[in-house]
Every structure is written in C-alpha cells, then in structure tokens.
Length: 441
Ligand SMILES: Cc1ncc(COP(=O)(O)O)c(C=O)c1O
Image (cartoon, rainbow, N blue to C red):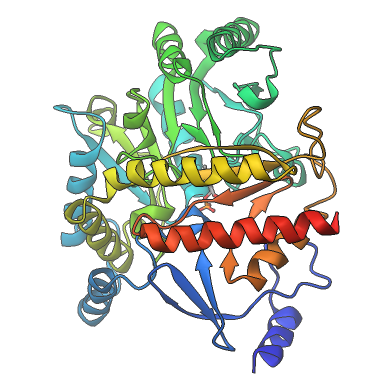
C-alpha cells in the first residue's frame, strides 16, 4: 500500500526546498500524541514536533472537537465582519503577551512568512522609515518580503527580491563570528558590530530590526545572556521597532508563552504561526502592542487577506491556547529542558560526531562535526544539501524516530506534552542511530 502511495506522491507532488529526484519519505496517515504512523502502520516518535509546530502533540481531543464544531457551525466569515472566536483568541493572545497592562491587538494571517511580510509593512507605515535589518543566520519565510528578510541560503533563489533589507551577524557562541571566547565578549562585540552597521545604514532610516529570539532552523542558536536586552536598548535609542519572530519560539517552546518573556525583552511586535494551533490548521499573525496598534485607529491598516482570522483556524487557535494554559504547557518546557540537557549532554560526550548539543526549553539540536577539536562541520553549511546527514535520518527512522534538520544540525524538539519515559526512549534511539551512523562514516 505504502509503495503505491509513495510513487503517486513522487509523481504528482512537489516537495518544498528539495531536489525532487529520488525522494522517498514515509507516507504519514495518522497521528496520536507524540507519534505519527505511516501507511504500513509503522510508528515514529515525532522528535521535531512536525516542523517545531505540533506543540500539543497530535490529535489533542479539545482542539479536534473545536475544529469539528466550528466546521458544523460556520466555515467562513469575511475579515471585515466581526467573529466570536477571532475576538476571543485575540483577547487570549493579549493576555499571554509580554505587554502587561498595555496589551496588544492582533492582525491574523495564514502563515509565518505572511506575518513577517505584514509586520514589516506595518513597521514602515508606523515609522515612515524604509530599511529593515535581520541576522544572516535566520529564516523568516519564503514569500515576497520574508524571503529577503531570511539571512541564509534559501534567500538566494528569491533574489534580487524586494529592496531595503540589510543584514548583520548575530552571536553564535560555538563558532563566534567575533573571535570571542566568552559569552560576555560575544554579546559586547555583536552589539558593537550592530551599532557600526546602523551608523553605516543611518539609524534614522531604519524602521525595524526583526529577529528570532532563538535562531531556529539555522541551528538552534541560543543568544548569550544580555544580547537581546542590549539589542532592545539599541533599538529604543534610535526609535527603531523591535519585531520578535516567534514563529518557532512562540507558544511554550522555550519555557514561556513567548521567547521574549523567557529572555526578558519587550519587543514592539511579535509574529507567530505554527504553535498557535499546534499546526492543526494554518494560522499566523502579528501581535502589535497597543500604543502602536492605535496608529491605525484613524488611518487604514495597509494589509489584508481573504483568510485573515479564518473561523476554522481561529477556533483551532483558541482551543489550542486554552489547552496550553489549562495544562500548564508554557512552563513545561523548563522541565523538558532539564531532561534534554542531561540526555543530550551524555550523547554529546559519547559520540565523536557531536560537536555541540545546545538549546533551551524543549528546543534543542545537535551540531555534527568531522572533528571535535577543529569543529569542521560534518557537511558544509551552505553546501550542496544534507549529504551524509541523510544516513543519520535513515538510521533514526529505522529506530522509530522522525526528526529533521539543516545541513550539519539535527533538531531535537519534542511536543511539550512528552513524558520522561517517551523522551528517554527517543534519546536511546538517537544514541543508537548515532552509533550506527558513525560506523558508516
Ligand atoms: C522563525 C521562522 N519564521 C518564519 C517562518 C515561516 O513560516 P511559514 O512556513 O509558516 O511561512 C518559519 C518557518 O519555519 C520560521 O521558523
């Protein structure tokens, strides 16, 4: 059964970002809790939470029921009409936001990419400035503006793209772009570099700096302490808006509702998607702090989408956010962090290919190297693709684990509902897969 479906898929579906020849992924037909099942009934532990999105695990009954009930009641209402669940979800988002006392309003979109496009357009409309700065090691989506906000190689296919976006180097403690040897120096030098970049771009022309609070698909890089607060201070000094791209870090991934709260910064806007519905339905948005959102009381908001605040998607979002809150899942990643830090720390010590195991909350990754001393990447960053990393993912699948990664970095980011026993099993499979992988290198 599975072989026929695989052939059908390969013949008719184009898969994102990959050369299409020879693709052969399992055909996933069912999900339950931390597991997904293929057409042959094989079970895989979802160690990457889909694409760092299925924070609740698969098939949460309350979200499934909310979707079913909404489908039976109302599948669509134009965004210009008000809608009950849309209002309630936006109110929940304001409550869990970092803007205590002030609150926020939300402009809903369908994806993370659209959210970043809209956030930038809104920042330009508010400030009257045009330039936007992002980090080189970043992914912000693949639509018109967001592909250019993206710092890494996926941007190249979208170039020359929309103008006005400049990039800078942000901290990367394992491979410091600033030759720093301590986290304090990394932060200080990264801020100095950003200050210099701003001088050359003229800070009075910069509308916003948009940044992932933890770098996601570009290697799960946790910025050293002090970097994000110093970045916030720098943006405030120059009247530049700070936009936190929380598409991956939002909704409990780092051990707080948003990464901004975990790292003690108050941005001006937050973009989100993925975890807001635990990825059950496509929903994204831009949360804008009240003092900025009120800019649009008298003048028109410069964006709109047919699916802005789609009833099915906001109903899923409302049920998801309520489930996170009822089950205490925004905090839970702190507990998972302890398990991951210990388990992956052991794995890093044991395996010669693991250069570093790093992360925060339930958001970790392994960076693989040819040699721990030289840190030469196992496959080159910005090289030709995953190369030998494919063998690692195959070994994982053989042991009933699915995850993904980019170049020499593999994600370890389970759903926030994972139990210690399930995670232990997943980490044992990872340990076994790394052993088998090393034997083939
Ligand atoms: C940090 C970040 N921003 C934006 C996006 C784009 O989101 P989407 O794929 O929903 O457009 C992603 C996707 O992985 C992401 O990780």
